[in-house]
Image (cartoon, rainbow, N blue to C red; front, top):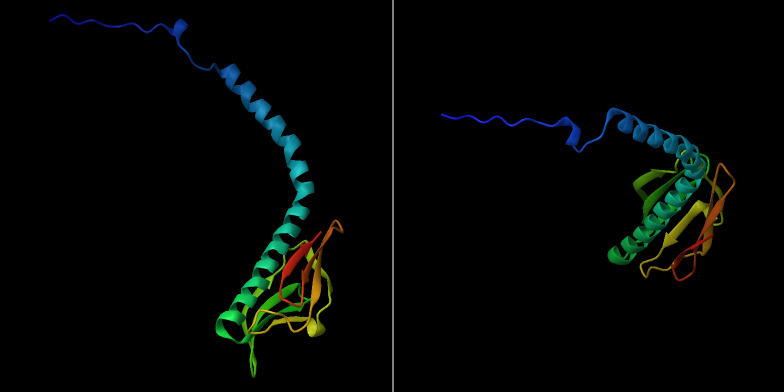
Length: 155
């Protein structure tokens, strides 16, 4: 029996040295330290746009429920608690869901009577109006609901 042993040559190996690896880690750390404050400065704007998107989605959902079930549905806004509720409006009001605004976002102005937008069985609203949201950096976004029930975001 003849055994052959191969030798490993460390000088020709392709890989990273510890020094190269530490330099890469340091570069990633420096880029992270620069990027984190920029992200935190942009975060209130992200929260505002997310809250606006969620509210528009819920307005359209209430409108869809009204058309589908041929019953009046709506959204009730509460400026004191920074919440809104999706409601079914019949002989009595039934709360389907309550949603909170993000921590750094609040209602600035609601132009609907009694703080409610109501969609009739045709998908139109009983009263046109708007809702304005504001973040901690005083950036506002307005959601407009037209008489036909069309929901539009105005920046």
